[in-house]
Amino acid sequence: MAGMETTDVVILGAGAAGLMAAIEAGRRGRRVIVLDHARAPGEKIRISGGGRCNFTNRALTRQNAMQRLLSANPRFALSALSRYTPDDFIARIDAAGIAWHEKHLGQLFCDGKATQVVDLLVRDLRAAGAELRLQVSVEGVSRTADGFSVATSAGPIAAQSVIVATGGKSIPKMGATGIGYQIARDFGLGLIETRPALVPLTFAEQDLARSAPLSGIALEARVGHGKIGFDEALLFTHRGLSGPAILQISSYWREGDAIEVDLMPGRDIAADLAEQRASTGKQALHNALARHMPDKLAQYIVADTGLTGRLADQPNTALAKIAERVHRWQVRPVGSEGYRTAEVTLGGVDTTDLDAKTLQARSVSGLYFIGEVVDVTGWLGGYNFQWAWASGWAAGQVA
Ligand code: FDA
Figure 1 (cartoon, rainbow, N blue to C red):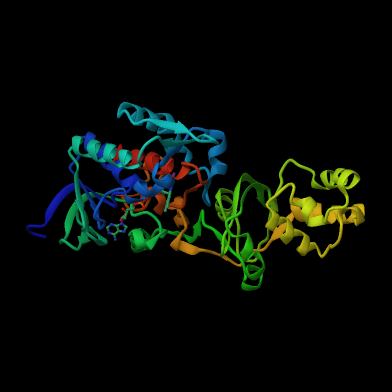
Figure 2: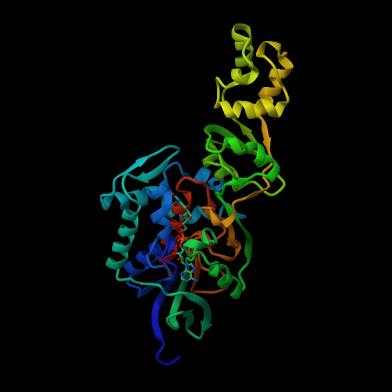
């Protein structure tokens, strides 16, 4: 079209992945325009990790990557992840003088505010000569004779390459739109069904009535589903269950499934209660249990088992019943809190339609998909940002 603005690369979305790709493509001398409808770039980076950004995970290895990044094709992410590693991102953070610490399980957080990471990326983007345009909505992408035309609220832009970095569906309030999936569909790429992940799970009405008094109680637990289990904090909420252990398991849980919760991992509550029975058996059963956990939780568990009376009156079979409920609690959530609070979106652009090394669509030369819009979803703990950095870096080398 005569007079249409033209550039080398248009990047859709100024989140973690889009900013990284823009820096890398700009450093190669490409003319890059990054579009985002938000007022500020990297809004999810800003609010991530409780405002301190869990920017990577140094426990990530080639061996565990296929487990810690979920995808219909778990091998897909390995190429990008092995070429741009957690150490590579740490080196950038260090070079910028951003102080950080390891919390646990390899999770790295800024000592100060997450906005330092956004500032670092925007500074590098500008230094690389890329242009950031905010408050511009992307409406669609179409093929032209020599590249693409990107339709935006500020008019069309022609480009040789388009990198789709529009993220998932999580937290629509923050600008998630799902446009990336639409673009994939328009170009005939496959989609793996999406669902909210790293999200609190909810109880049925009748269960909530009983569990309501537990709201606010947090404890270290082991939460399992099938062969996978997480030893992390669990939190009772007024809707059901949350906390890192639950967010992690939510990526595996499906409607109708039960999850198994050990409320005292590594302990043997039947043995502890048998010992107490011999010394202080006069106390009520729930008081005996309350020596090991919050009082309200002990009452809830004892009520659940239907047992009453003093500890001294409980035969070993009763203690085994308590132990079953404490160590192998079968919980059947009815749902999740959905995209409203989910940290990420499972599923997305089918990786079989993308080249693992470049993130380019196999059937559409010049079109790339990076970050959360792709069917690669990490565990809680910095894995999602590492995927965003690595996939953005990989596309930025070639687009
Ligand atoms: P991202 O969502 O960051 O960016 C997409 C961009 O596209 C947005 O800026 C959006 O405005 C823009 N966009 C969408 N549609 C558009 C349209 N039609 N037109 C124009 N622009 C459009 N991960 C982690 O590793 N460590 C952590 O500590 C956390 N913490 C965390 C907390 C919370 C509350 C959430 C919600 C998520 C996390 N995450 C996380 C996950 C992490 O934030 C997420 O995986 C990455 O931000 C994904 O990066 P992307 O660049 O792919 O998408």
